[in-house]
Structures are given as C-alpha cells and as structure tokens.
Image (cartoon, rainbow, N blue to C red; front, side, top):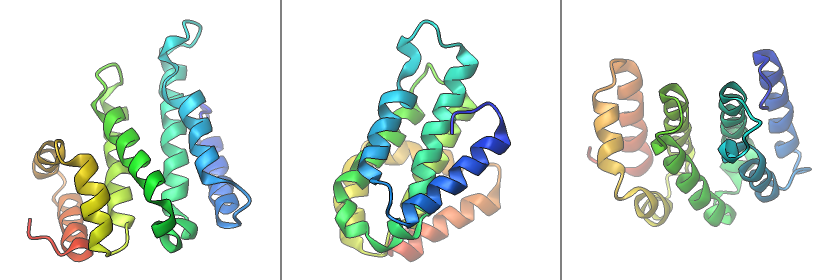
Amino acid sequence: LASNRKCSRLGFSCCLTELIELETVNVEELIEIGRKFLSNSSKDALITKEELRHMHIGFIFIYLCWIKSQRFKQQQKGYNSLIKLALHDLNEMRKRTDIKFYIQELYLQTLIDLIKNLSQDSDIFKTLVLTELENDFKEIWNFLSSNENPKEQSSIIQAFKSNFNLLL
C-alpha cells in the first residue's frame, strides 16, 4: 500500500478491500498496524521524504479500503470506537504541518468519505462525528466552502443534508 508504484497501490488496495469483505482480516488490528508502521514514521532518520509521503498514502489507503467495504456499511454500530479513532487519526493527520499540502488534502478527503459513508443514524453523527470534530468543524466547512470545484462542494453538502438531516 505504501509502494511508489501507483498500480501496485491500487492492486493491493483492491485486494485488501476484498479481504476485509471476506472478514479474513481484523480491521482493528489492520488499522493498528497501519498506525504503527505507516502513519508516524518521520522519527526514522533513514526514511526519505518521498518514502514518508508514500507511507502516508498507504495509511490513507487502509482507511479507504475499510470505508469503501460492505463490511463497514453493514457493521457500523459495532465499530463506534474504530470510527472515533478513524475520525481522530484522519483529522489530526490533515492538520500536521510537516506533511505536504496535497497529502493533507488526501487525509481531509478520506475524512469526508468516512462521514459521507456513515449511516443515516443521527446518533452516530452526534456522538462520534460532532464530538470528535467539534472544534475543527468550522475550519473544515470553510475549506469546503472555498473549494473551487462546485460539483464536489455540492455533493458534500448534499451528503450532510441527506445523511444527517442538517441544515448547513
């Protein structure tokens, strides 16, 4: 997932998504492995900046594989602590100043995908999303509002309105 070969990342992420679907992978352990080996590796002096960027992309792919899986859609209630961890990880990583801006945008887009894929259960939104992102929600909203791509902006606004019955 952290390969510098884009096709490899895509192939491995498709495979990982299928493994998650088959429930042969423990998602909690998978994310913990990603957190340990891919998300915070700037401490290792032997890793180049390019490798570090690829590692961040690999970490993002782990979350995306889980978010896009049917298992995520079907078992959200059982994943409350993991959803909260994902919200925290993605939100914190998007704010790190030592990460290139385009990687921060990938973290933000993954965070948005997570929110868009949550069920329409307003309790999940209130207890997890708003609790975790409360302080940063205005900043995220301002970023979305200033987005130069009106189609993307309107799809995100629509996801919030339809999924969580919010008036934004």
